[in-house]
Image (cartoon, rainbow, N blue to C red; front, side, top):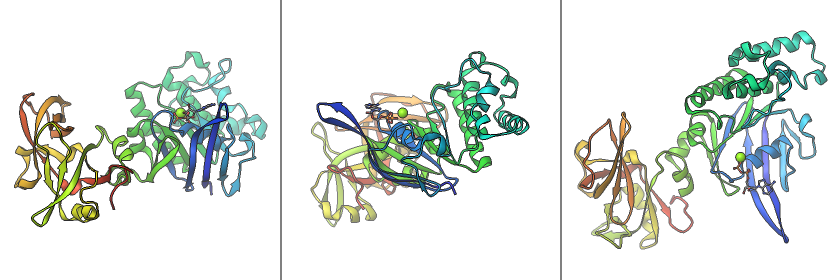
Length: 376
Ligand code: ADP
Ligand code: MG
């Protein structure tokens, strides 16, 4: 049972003059046996540092790491039962792919036949059987990463650790490798911890996503929960492309209903009547600075909405139209805020005209402007 348990894990780097940088800040997470967990966050958010602490390449400043029921803080990397794949394949240049994949297995007293079988099995599944006799400099970037993954596979670790293994590949190859790693996870049914800054990789690969920012864990949940129910503005803004629209304002009562009123010093503020559920959440925060969050697919051209409710309509200036074929992004300006709406199909829009859009407020969220946490 290769569970990995991080308990209150921290990493501090000295900056000199008694100052420290907290790269990882009290991260606690229990990763299940055979689970695929993706750590995602912007560059510098502490993802690699967490992985390197699990691997034993860095000491934890505080907190504990347990793998398979055993605390490993003082266990050397080789004895932790992990294999790590890095962004650059990190193969020995003077050894062949075969030798790179088997390096280290000799010490585990693996017979030549068994070793051969393991290498060929892994190479076949990754499509690199034909390059086993070559040295790394004869390989494409994609083949190099496959060889690095192959090396991890033959070592039969309890836990696979991946640190942005696809970042150096071009876009089409990234998509292919993404599915290969997902298939690998299904086939090996091993515990995998995967680090990326790419939210598409996180959404498509992870059983659960752990979103990081500035060393802190912002939310851990399955991809759809992360997308549909972000706990805070950071998660709403980081996951999803384009990011969630955020509109600052306040909630005010008017003739028996609650309205979200946009903070807009330049033009007429947007005014949206809140549906019952949102109104219930906002009732205790009347007049306080709040933020309405809504995804672009929930802001639509009014013309395509059947029976639009008059209280959910916003008029804004269309500044840019971005047709992508299957859909078109519409960049709007309300005077107070920029907004992105989404139209289905490649629709032609005239820019610098006013466009009426419809807010599907049943899918909107309200956040506290100060703490940036969602109102519950
Ligand atoms: P990520 O992988 O999310 O991009 P890292 O874990 O590499 O982030 O780094 C987190 C933070 O710790 C960054 O601000 C980085 O500059 C800092 N950091 C990482 N390694 C060191 C180090 N050896 N010395 C000092 N600071 C470091
Ligand atoms: Mg990193």
